Amino acid sequence: MPVVRYPLPGARECSWAEFKNRYPDDRLYSIEILTGGPNLQLGVYDDSIKRGQVGPEDKACRGFSSPMMASDDVPPHQFYRIRIQSGVILHLLNVVSGDSWDITKSHSFVRPFAYLIHHQQKVKDEFKRLSSLASSRATSNSDENELETGDPRLVMSVKDVLDDICVYINFVDSELVPLYHQFENTNDASQTIQFDDL
Image (cartoon, rainbow, N blue to C red):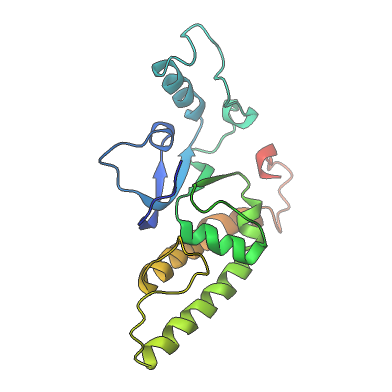
C-alpha cells in the first residue's frame, strides 16, 4: 500500500475491517493501529468469508493465525499491528537506524514493536535537531518554508514535518514504551506473559 502523500498527523485505532480496507471517505492518518481483544480472530474470519478467501466451513483463517488471538486470556483491548503511512516518519527511521525502508510504501510492524521502541531515543534526538534547525530559520527570518529531509520525494512544510514526527514520538512514548516496561518490578507469580510480548 502506498504511503499517504499528505497524511493527517495522528494515530487512528482500527478494527480488522478498517485496517484491511481503505474506503474513499476515510481520513488518512500518519499511523494506523490494528486493535482488538478476544474477538479479533472472529473479525478476521468474517472478513475473509466476505472476500471469498475462506468458506463458512473452514475453521481457521488463512494467513492470519496467532495462539494469542484464540486464547481466553487476551486482554479486552490491545495493539496487534501498527502501520506507518507517513513517508516523513519512515525516512526518519531510516536516518536513525541506518536501514533503507522504501518510503513510498507504508510499512506494518507487529507486536511487541521492538524495532520502534529500540530506536525511540534516536528519533527524539533527531527531532530535537530538526526543531532547532526550524527555530534558527524562524529567528533569521528565512523565507524557506520547507525542511530539508535529504530525500527529494519528501517536500513538506516545516510545520507538517515536525507535526508528523511529534505525533509519532508521543504515540510511541505513551502507548509502546509502557509495554516494554510492563513486567518490571513484578513479584506476582500468577501473572502470565503472552508469547507475542517476549
